[in-house]
Image (cartoon, rainbow, N blue to C red):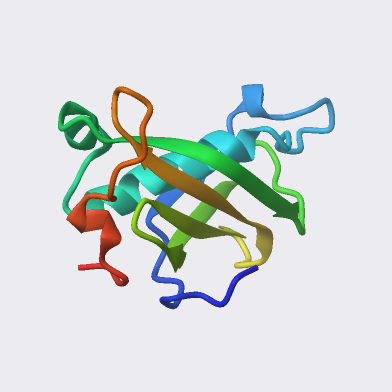
Length: 139
């Protein structure tokens, strides 16, 4: 992982593992983390003053160009996962976010990961990140 630009804040999103997100052993499927990271990122953006919908209405689209997830401990059906998000790297047109997922029952880190997002216009060309996302720390 990259050296973070900001410490992990309190969790911005909580997920209760749904039955449809588990395998036959009732363990959350690895693919579920993609959606959970996206949900946490959406709430992280909202706390910074800009929703995904507002950004898209303004013509700024975020494309995921990289997704990384490391699985540390399993989570099972009906457990709650608390997800924190922080800025790890910031550039004019992209941002790398890191995620830390903890089991609510015992605080154990169950997964860590990152996404690199590039800002593009509706024409697919790179654009500067909106000011709300380009700030190095949360507002």
